[in-house]
View 1: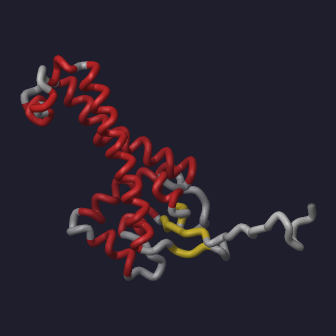
View 2 (view 1 turned 135 degrees about the vertical axis):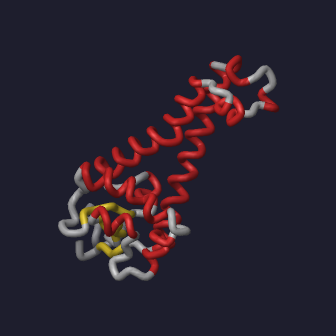
View 3 (view 1 turned 45 degrees about the vertical axis):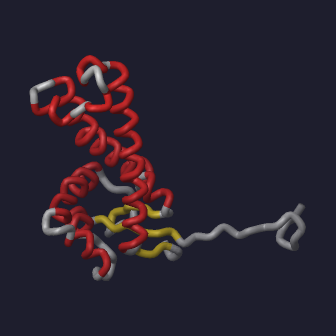
Length: 170
């Protein structure tokens, strides 16, 4: 852990943007597949399709998929990534890990679920819970504090060994 540091605001923003882009691509791809498979539920003319209108008019099939892709799938995927890898894909790309603030270990299921829903508290007051990262000593957001977590950045560097060097035993 001596090579780790608390992850700051901007690196975490970048990691979240990567996650957001991945979610948008997955959501758009799934929606496109659903449109192709069930085009009669949308409209004959895909150019002028209004999914929100179909949902408001009571198309229960679309309501179920909308809830699944906007709420259930992101929840399940996020918790799974936190428990399995200690990071979402965006955090992995930025070399960040989400750990228990006291032990440095992987989060418990309870911590993961609590942190996920505590993000609402960070978002509601104009995102102040996220901006708190910039001024906090341990760079914790409000939801990190509530869940007892920290995001750390690994600074471990692999030694570069060139083919013809003194460090290469071959």
